[in-house]
Every structure is written in structure tokens, then in C-alpha cells.
Image (cartoon, rainbow over all chains, first blue to last red; front, side, top):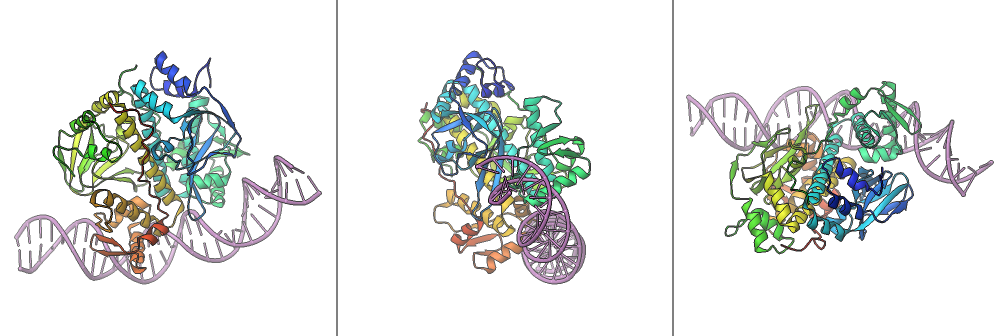
Length: 246
Length: 246
DNA sequence: CGACCCCTTGATTAGCCTCAACAACCGTGG
DNA sequence: CCACGGTTGTTGAGGCTAATCAAGGGGTCG
């Protein structure tokens, strides 16, 4: 959602705090360039030294690591307003491969600009820090899902994550969405094989928990889905400790 | 390692940048209090609203989440110089339970003091942000280990993580250490049962990769251990993008 | 129209869990 | 000092979950 000259990152952050004009300007400046990426294309690969970070303006992406045994693990999906490539800040090189799941619009910006943002806008720095912690916790929850629950629960968990994301952009009452992933990708995200993902999805359909037609998914018994998944919603972010706005 | 009036957090950060006196003072101020925690004791529980964060001065801890089905997933182990409780910054309440694995010395400090640090020392803010990203990546690597590798590889991976940590404090050439964890805890960290952890450990011993006596572990064929684990060392942190020191 | 990708389904296998029993070790109290 | 209970480590047998292997169907793109 881009409003008059708006920025996806600013819109995202505005969910949590009231941005000052100066802060909004600083965030909008990060999105002064655009780049289109076709679905299936890698934005950068593990080991690359990308000059830029990116704000996602439109589309879905995922980040994954490739293992020595030939398999891959999808870590995280990225949506409008997310910053991608952050891991290259800490390591110089990127630790993960980021790939477009759908056609995407990205806004590249140089890493140094984030450093300047940290200096001039401590509150934004703290807020972005906060969101990085939340992202870390999402990984932790996914770790628990994969480490300690059944195949069916893992697939259910992933669906819960997606519907939560959809609601951020499409509105509170959405209960269906287009799932642009192959079952192999779902498997790589949940630590399962594509074959077993298929069986689990059909099981959820048979039990009346979801409906599918093509890539379209509708959650018909969301309470039960969340229950089986053990899903915890962590949408609420605490901003009370942030420094004053600048 | 505490030097003359030193601070564990400052020592940790000094690995990556040369701290100015002002920065060092600010960090030391966070460790003006001490608290002893006996092994097996929880520092705080999931859902608690701890007033403080903590710097670990001595000892091992772990953070875990408890699942609806009664099992738990250990996310991460914490060592001297780590900041714990960071997740409570983002959520108000803590999202994880932190428990002392050994007797520990912790330094509590109020969350607001971190906000003030962000304002007055942007470079430290950026550096701590960097370390949080690295922490997030450690979780991602563990996710790949649990999601996509065998039980044996997962146990091997955990051992690789520990030896890397030991070397940060005990020196480059260490190849043995005391592992103060029960096999059940190792299982909760790797997504396995204690019984199966036992079998995997014995397998590693039989194959001449490690030796054990009691809680003491020696890595006799580390190259093979790392190879089987698919372990990636991410010790090197990039600090070139940080803002100027203050 | 053919090639390729993705979904689907069945049969079989393998890896890890569960249950169970016992040994070794620890801290505690007599 | 020993007796004791509780925790942890070890080992075996059997079962279940998810992987593997295999084959066919539908859709899409060139």
C-alpha cells in the first residue's frame, strides 16, 4: 500500500509509533529507487556481498540456506514493508539466499544509509531493533514447531503464519488467501518432503479445517487450525521503552 | 574474564571495535549490580514482565519455550558477555523462559538504560544490533540443522557450537570442555529424545570422533565432527558500516 | 504437441520414538 | 560412615511417523 509519496517501510513502522515528519522523510528516502524481480529469481545468494539492502514494496520472497547434503531450509518469508538483506550487515557477506516467490518490487538502498539513520534517528534505530528481535522470535517459534511437533502441526503452523501476514495487509477479517508456494517449498520451510506435505494438506481438507482450489486456500475452522498448530500470535510489539522522537 | 573494574559486555564488544572511554564507561554502568543464580533456577519465565535485562557475567544459561503438548524447545545457550531478556524488549513480556544451567552471576539493569544507551552511543546501538542479527542467524542455522539433518548430525552440530563458544573464552586451541547438560536437555535443544541422544553420543564415541568421561567431552576428530554436522562458523562480524564512535 | 513441472497416490523402508528395566551417580539425612 | 531416594545414563524390543521409491495425471509453456 503506497500512499501519496509514501513508503512501505514507513507504513509498517507507523503501525507501532506516530512518526514525526522528519522520521518519515528519512524512511521515504530509503525507497527512492525501485527494482523489479521476477518470480523464481534470486535477489542475492548465500555468500554474495550485496552493496545494498532492500525494502520490499510488493510481493512475497523467502530466504533460505543450502546444506551440504543438498537440501535446503527456508527460514522466513518476506512481505511488503520488510527489510531484506539485514544478515549481510552483520557478516559482510549474506548468510542466506533470498528468492522471489512472486513477482516483486524492491527498493534497494546502500547499507551506509542505515548507519546514518541510526545516528540521526535513535528512535527509528530502536524500533527497527525491536522488529529484528520480533523477527528473531518468529524464527524461534518456528524452531519449536519443527523441533517438537508433528508434520501435520508444522503445516498448520505455516498456514497460521500466512493468514496472520495476510491480515496485516488485507484486513482483519480475511480468512482465505492465495498460497503461491509449491509443496516442495512448503516442505523446505517445515522440514518435510513434498510428498508428506501433500498428505498433510489433504488430511486438513478431509477434516474440514481448510478448503483448497488450486493455489487458493480458505481456513474453514481456524480455531482448530491454531489449536493443532500450537500457534502463538506475537503481533503486539512493545514500544514503551523507545527513546524520544527526533 | 573481568579485568580491573571491567565489564563482560564491554569485553565482548571490544572483540569487534576499539571502545572509547566514554563507551566503556556507559557499558560498565550496566553492570553495577550483581545477582547470583543457582543452577537449575529460572531467571524469568515465559510471560513474565521482567523489569530488568541481564548481562551474563559468569555461567551458562539456556532459553526455551514450552509447547502445548508438554514438550519444550531449547532455543539458545547463553554465556559470559551475552545480554539476556532482550525478547522482553519487543513484547513487553518475555517470550521465553531463561534457566541457569550452571551457577551464574548476572548483572541486572533496567530496560530504559538500554534506550538511553541507544541515544547517547549510536555506534554501540549499531553494534548491539549487529550482534542481535548474528544471534538471529545462529537460530537460523540451528533451524536448518533440526529441519534438514539426521539425529547424529544435530548432536554433532551442538557440540560444534559449544567448542566454538569455549574457544572464545578459554583460547584458540581448546579441544575439550565440560558439558554441563543432561541428555534430556541436549534432546530438547536438538529436537530429539534423551534416549536417542544417548545412542548418537555413543555412536560418536565408537567412531572415534569424541571421547567422554562423565560430563567431560574431548573432540578427537574435529574435522569429521564439523563435516558430519555441516557446521558453519560465523564468528567473524562485519563492523565496517557502523557509525562513528562517540 | 511434447516437455516439464507440480500434484497425487500407493508400497515399502528407515529413522526415531515409546516403553521398560536396570545401573551408576548424586545429595541428603540418619 | 552408610542407607536412601531421586536423577541421569544405558540398553533392548517393538511401533509409528515420515522418508523413499515409483508411477500416473493435469496444467502450462514453448
